[in-house]
Amino acid sequence: MTGAADGTAASGPAIVAHGVGRTYGSTTVLEDVDLTFEEGRVHGLLGRNGAGKTTLLRLLTGLDRPSTGRVRVLGGDPFENEGLAGRVCFVKESVVYPETFRVRHALRAAALVFPRWDADRAAELLDAFALPTDRTVKKLSRGMTSALGVVIGLASRAEVTLFDEPYLGLDATARQLFYDALLEEIGELPRTVVLSTHLIDEVDHLLERVVVLDHGRVLLDAEADEVRGSALEVVGASGAVDAFVADRRLLRREALGPLARATVAARLTADERRRAEGLGLDLSPVPLQQVVVSLTGARSADVRTLEEVPS
Image (cartoon, rainbow, N blue to C red; front, side):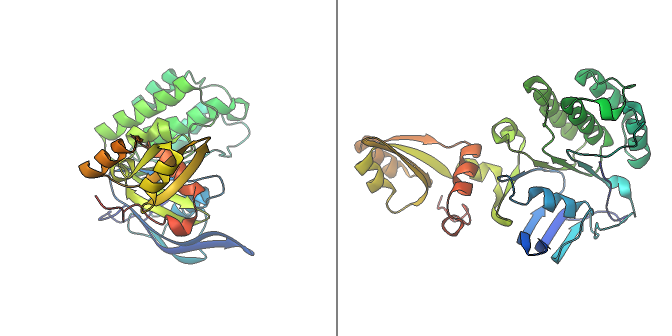
């Protein structure tokens, strides 16, 4: 966990990045990133390994600073900003605690950092995840370490809470516990949440807006509902599929013998659906995860945004 932010009262967007780039030597990790995370919403930060998600989160929490551009979190520059450290909580995979720190010590430290810390909620979550409070943190399993991060992230009740792959090591039951607890938390006390994850299908119902990074650039920044309804899968005879998708933005195409399956960025009219039916084509909506997979597997020049797709 890491705290960072300005001490002044927040107004407007919780997080803004403008023209942000980050290079390490000759390697460019982020390039010309522009995005806004609005207050009180759950945002998905999605993309393949190496897309730059963790680097961006480090910039947002002041653990690193941009090579170009600027970042503002709750109105201030987060880099080395101790104005009110407890307003932002960063839950990441690896947190280094003192060798002798036990779980209860980690919770005690969090209670000192975050002014809105909810000790009762922390106790409930400890029981739910079956976390032993007297065990040293270094002796926790990977799943228990992740659970400790989840407990701190939720019980911190920080105005901005960033989760970087929070499910690592958690089994399916524990992951569902996290998702349910997150829903309950934001229902009781709205906050800005950024959730970086590969398990898009599991968190689909949580996300209100999604940002997709690809090779360090923003490939997509849109409302989650818009993305869910922006693509469809077309299956049928290869020639019929190709004819139907010829004038549409093709995200993916697979050959299945004499058949083909294509994913296209499109919203169809009733007439277009009747045409597809006449061609013997099957149409089905594409879930959010498949849209992201299709986008990051396609050429960036062809799919910079889905917001251009006509409704």
